[in-house]
Structure formats: C-alpha cells, structure tokens
Image 1 (cartoon, rainbow, N blue to C red):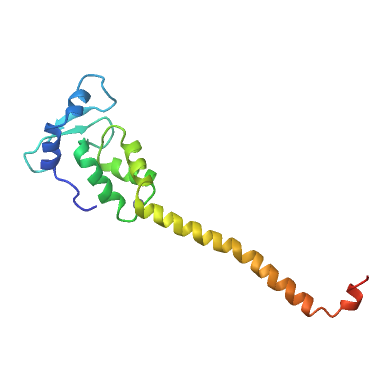
Image 2 (cartoon, protein in one colour):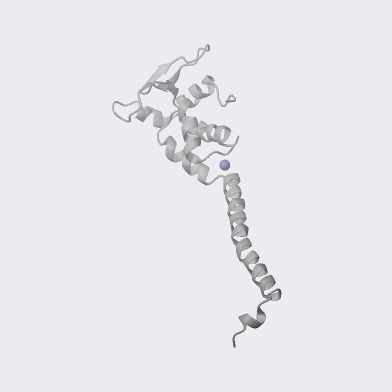
Length: 150
Ligand SMILES: [Zn+2]
C-alpha cells in the first residue's frame, strides 16, 4: 500500500482531536488506546491495542484521505474497503463511515449504471431473436395448406 499518512501527521491530528479526549476516558469505547512509538521517528501516536495488531487511531481530519487512497485504486465494495482499512487503522464507526463513502463514490455509481444498461440490452435481445425466428418460419412454411385448416 502506498504511504497514505505519516506518524507525524497522525500525532499532530491527535493533539487537536476533541473526540479522542473523550475516548481516552475509562470505558468510553471498546478501543484500548495507548501512546506508542510505531516507527523509527520520535512521534508518539495513540494506537488501539485491543486486537492482535496494533493500529494507529485516526483523527477525523485524516479519515477521508485514508478512504480515498485505499478505495480509489480498484474501487472495491464498501465492505472490502472497510476490511482493508481496518487492517492498518482504527477509528470509531470505521465500518459505517467507509460503507457510506463507498456508496456515494461517483466512480462506483457510474460503473453500476453501466452494468445495469448492459443487463437491459441482454434482456431485449431475447424477444428480437424470437420475432426474427417466427417471421422466417412463417415465410418458409411449406405446410401452409396443411397448416391452414380453416
Ligand atoms: Zn468507488
């Protein structure tokens, strides 16, 4: 994955994050946030240590950028995007935010319309073939006399 953000940026955003202050209160959320140094720099970032992987907490100002950088490569579904992001990052309601943003992604909406149009054309093809077949068979009907019992 390309570099989306740096620990410096994460740490900087966290110092201005009012929500984070609330989350740090005991039992405020299921996240277990601890200040950690996660790379070779001196930057200390609050990370969630409740799971097997230590994931840096992302302040709201950086969330959308992380979504864009992850989603805009191949435009996976909201669920897949959310899985990819939550492997490396954490924030409250990450799933909800990411699926919502994926729903409103213009590129995804356009490709959905394209798929929809293709399906409509395929459905129209069937009656056209049917009409051609029936007209040919009546033109070349060699049993007109026997067919016409009236
Ligand atoms: Zn998309």
